[in-house]
Amino acid sequence: MTEQSSPDGAVSHNSPGPSEEESPITPWGAPRSKSVTWHEPSIVAGAVPTLSGIEFLRAVRDERLPAPPIARLMGMRLTEVEPGRIVFECEPDESVYNPIGTVHGGLLCTLADSVTACAVQTTLPLGMTYTSIDLNISYLRPVTVNSGVLRATGTVTKPGRRVAFASAEIVDGAGKVVATATSSCLIMAAGA
Image (cartoon, rainbow, N blue to C red; front, side, top):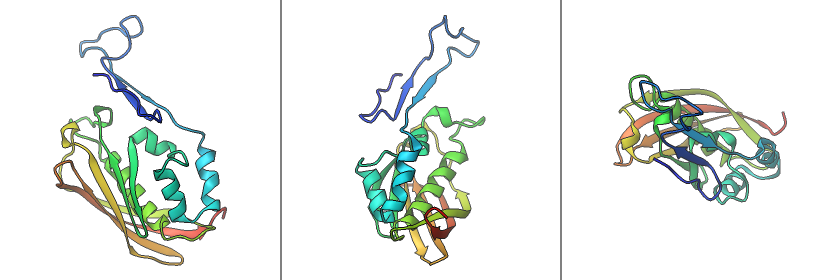
C-alpha cells in the first residue's frame, strides 16, 4: 500500500516499509511506515491574537494559515466553520491501532477535544483565546480502518465569558455514531 501526500504534504503511508537492508524482515513481516510533515508551530500560534476565533479557523480551513501540527499528525481536516459549530474529518489508518485491533480511543478523544474547543473558539472575539478544562467521552462503537472517514462535529451548548461548554458527536463513514463527548473551556485574554 502506498499513499501519496496531499497537495500540502500532510501524510503519506508506505507499505511494506523500509527496505530489507534498513530493517530486516521479522516473523511479522516488514515494518510499515508513515511520514508526517508540518509547518513551524509559531506561524499558526502567532495568528491567534490577530484574528477573531472564527476568522482564524476559516483561515486554517481555507489554507491561508497552516494546520496545527497535531492535525497533520492525526490526519484531521477542518471542513466546516460556523459560529458555534465546527466539523473535522479524519480517516484513521492502522498506525493508530491499539493492541486489540481497533483504532485507539486517544484518536477519538483528540478529535472530540479538537472540535469542542474549536467550536468554542468560533465564538471568541479578537484578543481572546481558550484552553480545555475537561473532556468526558463515551465510546459507542469500535472504529477500524474499515469504518471510513470519521466526521466529528463540535457544537457550543453554552457560551460564556469565563467558561464555555460544548459537545461533540463523531460518526463513521456509514453515519453511525461511534463516540460522543462534552467539554468545558476556560476563556481568557490571548497571551495571558
